Length: 315
Image: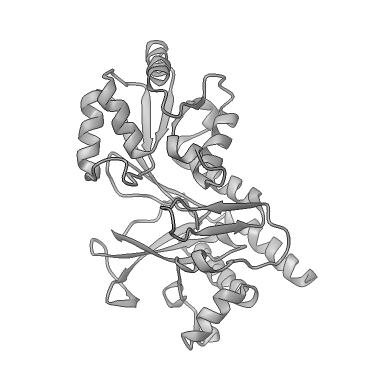
């Protein structure tokens, strides 16, 4: 146990210091071997595939755990304390994913460092959050992240606005009049509801949409949503965040451009008809995520999302 803890501590220290592709790949292989040795569910899955672990020398050879395992198993590398359990949203009667987080400081380091890479210091912004359905849950990883960023913004006007669109309108209008740099972080359907009620220029506001219609709004494309928001809020900059309950890291895109990942995260696009083959730039397939911050759980996740190959963020 002592040796395992030392190995975990040593690997964890390297996650947020990655500065090159070779460093990422080397650490990913080390974390894969660590998780194979200490994550019982992942080990059973890898063994069921008849993989010879000693022959895995490239990240493309690493088996990715299907994300549905988080609905039926506790995916952890330790039987020790659990700091936090995050759960995914879901409809009544449906199993939801549960992410058992042994060390919440890794999550905090991951999302704050990624935020700083893409946006700079979070105390440079007033942060307004429009996440009404997420606030109804106490186990949302998104709410945990946004709440942490709000508190660290050190702006007394930062906060959650649930579905109080009138108050949110007043606050953004004040930001625009004072030219205060502002982040509006919102779930898609709530942003569209807000846009249906109000029109105002937003030249000093960045909107970060987190996805999620969840039956609350007619399904539309991101391009259509962006057009609606730009019509109601002239001058607004629209960004998107990609994250999920089962991960501890996020990627971001701006103006419907390609998502970019922080240095400790990587996206691979698998062939939908051959999950162990990977596609080239521009080809659409299934999204596999490597999230090295997820060291206490599983860093190699086969998602059910579809996308095309992304370029890693260059630190």
